[in-house]
Each structure stands twice: as structure tokens, then as C-alpha cells.
Image (cartoon, rainbow, N blue to C red):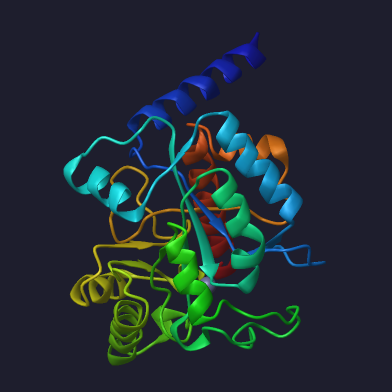
Length: 272
Ligand SMILES: [Zn+2]
């Protein structure tokens, strides 16, 4: 009896949380599309193909950054089951492995290349990462030719909260300029490296002309949409099918909430 009462309480609490939480659109966060051992940020092509096929079969609509912005800013309607696909850092395998699948399913995605690391080896990353290369300028142009999008991810991929104010402004301003000058991209949207930001970083994003910025879990407001702290859902290498289905369902906000609270709890424990 007591078990059923506890279960009922949990179910009611979950329903209450979901109905009262902000109506975010799910934004998936990918990095490499490749089979790399011991790299949680690399998803195999097979798994990625399964995921796109699932989204296609279930009638999901991949939307653009402008559509997402208009939905949040002016409540412009979105197709049912809207979702945004994003790729961090601009790895070459996004072009060679992901693009053919995106084209096959007529889907749109956004890539966030790092300004100073276009068409280079991935030497900005920590030691221990498998060496690879990033998309060249020509590949980024062709990516756009195929209806895909590009947005800013700073010039050098720093932890922005560790930077001086002028360094933050340079990182955000220069990458925005680079995208609009070299790639004729809008440069209206930003992705914080490592999802790392605070109030002054968000204010700098606003000041340098960005319309919105993507984070991950930390700093997310679960009850109010903040255009400069949009949550994203990481899709790691070990992503199981059932969890992917959950992450793209209406319950995804619960997943974000749990990860946010888990991080908060770990931080609190470290401080004690
Ligand atoms: Zn990154």
C-alpha cells in the first residue's frame, strides 16, 4: 500500500513538474560521428543512422535556428515534433559521415566550428583525444549549400568564465565577424564552449549582437525560457536506443532537470 502511495506521489510530482516547466524544444548535441574507442563524444555512424531513421519514421521535423528563435521570441508556430540537431567543434566527419545521412532524410542541422580551428588538426582538445581534422572552409561552404547551418563557437574554445571581459568580447565578436565575412553565415547564434557561461558571459553575448546562445545543463532556468542559456541534450557514444527515445520525447525536460540537479549536488558535495 505504502509503495503505491509513494509511486503515486512520484507520478504526480513528475506530471506537475513537466506541466509547470518551460516549453523548451529539444536540441540534441553531437560532436564527432565516428567510431572512436574511449571517447564519449564520438557516436558511431551506425548509431547516428539509426537515430535519424527513428526521427524520420516518427515524423520529427528538424528546424532551423531562426525557427527556434521565432518560436521563443514571438511565439511563431512550429511544426509538431520539432527538434534541432547541433554538432560542436566542426569535425570533418560531420561533413563526410553525417551530411550524407542528413541529406538522405532531408534534415537540417547546425555545426559550430571554432574560428581559429577551421580545416586543422584537433589540437585544442585535451591530450588523449584521437587525432582528427576539422571541416575546411570549402567543406563548410558546401555544408551550407546542402541546406545546413553554421553558428559561432568562439575563436579558441576557452572556458569563457575564466576569461577577462575584453577576451570574452574578442572571442564572441571575432567569431561572429568570421562567420559573416568568410562564410556568409548569419552569426546570430552562439554555442558556449563546454556549455560554460555565467551572467557576464551571457551579457557579452547580447552586447556583441547574438540573438541567442546555447549551453548544456548548468545555468539553465527550468521554469523560464532564457534565450542566452538554451539547454541541449548530449548524445554520447554509448547512447542506448531507449534513452534516445526518451531524450527526444516530451519527457526530455525531465532528463535535463535530473542532470542539472546531479551536477548541482556534486558541486555542493565537493564544497563541503
Ligand atoms: Zn566545443
